[in-house]
Amino acid sequence: MKEKNLSCEFDAQVWTKEWMRIIKENPSIPLDEATMLGWFANAIMAGYDHAKNDGRIVELQSIIAQQSETIKALKEDGERLSNNGEGYFTDGDCDFCGSPETHRPDCPITLHTDLMKKIEREG
Ligand SMILES: [Zn+2]
Figure 1 (cartoon, rainbow, N blue to C red):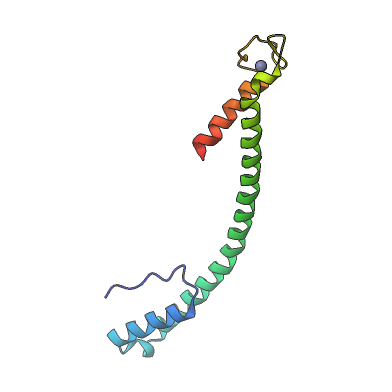
Figure 2 (figure 1 turned 45 degrees about the vertical axis):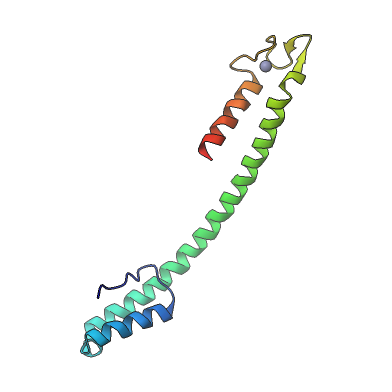
């Protein structure tokens, strides 16, 4: 039977079950000091790696949550700007870029609409 990859495993029960399976196939292993050393070293490091990475995962989840809130606010802002863009025209000219009816490429409404399209594409 193929060995299970335990490199990211931190559950002692999983390590024990795999150990029992290996011993049944190779009964002499518990008497081999090098194998025992390797087994415990790997189990300890798997726990260490998990603890170390878990903090990083929580940090990354926090960053993602903050960025999701920012993207949500940008989407709402973009919707408002694109839906009410006509409201920014005074006497036929855009209040921001001064262009009649359509916005210039450097108009804040055009830039924001482009940003919104980029955010939508990138999810
Ligand atoms: Zn404009």
